[in-house]
Length: 494
Ligand code: UDX
Image (cartoon, rainbow, N blue to C red; front, side):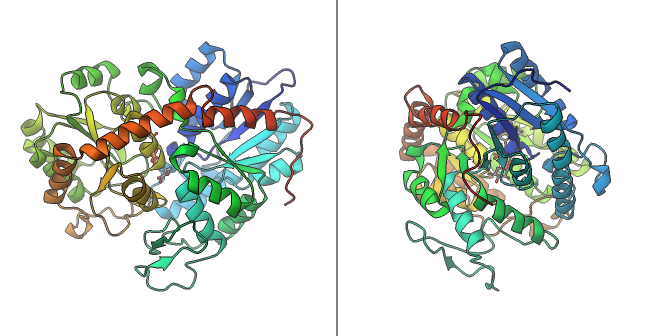
């Protein structure tokens, strides 16, 4: 294990949730903090470190003061398979509780590292879903900020729902409920809400998360003030603490090389992918990807494929490892791949998503509405087709389509499951038929000029926020100043 020799100032410890949608932005956060004069220790585990090996090597080469602390992840101790160290590796929602327990078991190793091997950090930034870090920070009297992979709009709604227990007495999960104390009228159903289906056994974890969210010194968000000013102000008032909007953090990746490998090793060679994209006309390709956690049944995959084919537009379609099956492989090779070979690139596994979205050939993004995907779309000025699955994703769809007006809905009315529970090949599992897939692609790609212009405008605003003197850049500098003092202790009592 590497150690940091002398006491640095300012010095941040980052504790991400072991899930790609949460870890990727925290790697960016580490870089941004280090580029602005802070020293950073990034807490990870052996399997996660291996996945981002190339990034770790690049950071070492760049001599940024970022150290990766690999803690052994107790997968087997909680009954998970050996090496199961990230949320996307779980085989079903019944494993979530085990995963959460394994994460909280990192507490003792982190405390002993901090006591014996590392100088005291001036601040810990931990994912909201790692609430045990609150105990670590208190034991060592270190200020603690929370981070959650999501934007401010979904964060604020989630905060109100959780802290006021809005849905506790709602029996019909399709009943529209008004969110109280929100800066404007907002209604949603329990089914589409970020709390979704409550899993038995998670009560203690949820309670701890609420407590630690309340007692944190502040919140760091991967967004920029100009994108959601009303919600940043309202979130600060509602939570009663400072909201540090320092994003979109992904903009710290400034070239293809940096953009090509995020969260995992890509399943396609960067050059092959770029060569294919270079052959396409500007803004002519639809990119289809559902992030790292959402899963798609075979029947639904086939409908997506047939919809893409029927639309007539070129496409890049990511079919993740967990969705590949003999049925899928057979279906693809039984005519589909051949029929679309001149205008379809199918990536089986992990795609270099940010590099793809940044290419001028991309004209639309069919997304599951994970916050990172949305930010990547915003930063590259690519309008979206929204297909939320669960968690914050229905809220993100609302923000994209109804508030920011940079996307069109595909029209899903009900959530899909967190993991692989909906797995059987049953036509009832098809949420969107091929005709509807084709129709919405045509709607965006053939028209959508207003949406496209708005998307380009937001991309400009995002860059401005991160440029020197921009709101996010200023917030980052202020945050480092505020928490760079070794004498500072937590302002909030638990
Ligand atoms: C999770 C939650 O599901 C989401 O709702 C929440 O907003 C963030 O955390 P995830 O589902 O993985 O995230 O989606 P997303 O937020 O879009 O993050 C996925 C990240 O992985 C993105 O940065 C994306 O670029 C990257 N990715 C995904 C790849 O680089 N290649 C892939 O093939 C898939």
